Length: 292
Image 1 (cartoon, rainbow, N blue to C red):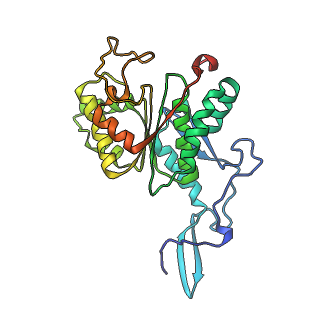
Image 2: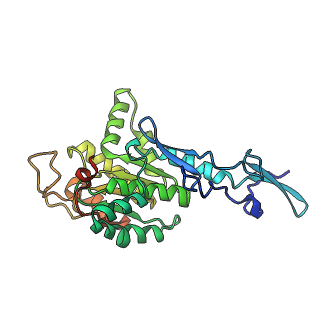
Image 3: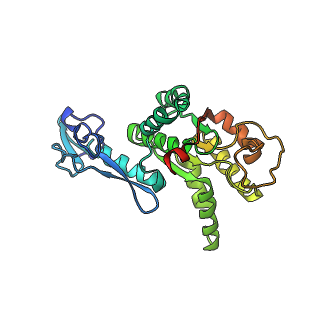
């Protein structure tokens, strides 16, 4: 018996979905909940047992006199749930979706719809996993950039089956320092971030601008640039070349005269401009509106 993967299966072996009338998953077949530290996806109870494989995940078919065995397409949803959980989206953003961003924009600030209609929407429509172009969301604090980045991550995972890793830049620096304190190096984590098909970096440019911090972001972006991998990011700084301006208050963001070039260095900024499209997310600060 051949154990080669089946590339074409009968119609009854199509990917399983949730019930259209399900009040919990809205027919998607999965739920995303706030877990311990990160958002966790799980299969909805409304998803039926696959009639083709009986839930075991493998099927066999007779084709041209040969018995072929392979993974059933019903496993596609399970795989994408695993991919989302591997992405490590923060628990705080478990409910963040593009639809939720649209709802908030319609209720509070229609200017935000420009970011979707002229930037994010066309980018998602043109997304090609073989030739992925990056995306950088920029704008003042509190405008929903992280929410939108998580929504994009969800769409890429569940609609395209993409493998994405989500990192908060300040948290990444903390993880590296923890590894150093245990006597471990940074090679494993940095290699993982350099090689993952799609990397989503939240709050790019945040930090104290130490030589070490600049070296970390330079290594990640340079390796991804050379490997032609897709990079997504959010930043509070204008996407302009370095000015050489230094802020007195290192925590200053709102009203900062510094640019993204100042925060990440000219080489990284130049490569980001070649790797990604930039989308401005403006409007009002949503945190006071939402009570966050």
